[in-house]
Length: 62
Ligand SMILES: [Zn+2]
Image 1: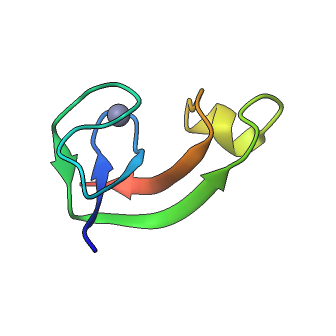
Image 2: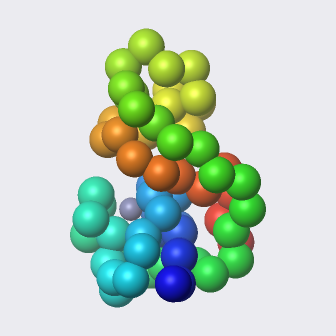
């Protein structure tokens, strides 16, 4: 299973060619770190990564 990360919002995208959040199709296979956001409101990590939609996100993309 190919997991890629959106270069714009860091969202982990599985078996798709575009990001479901921002519709960006610039996905990277070189990413590291994984964070799961359940509730984007009140989450320090979500705030730091500027995440508005719950889901799986990469910490870093290249
Ligand atoms: Zn995105």
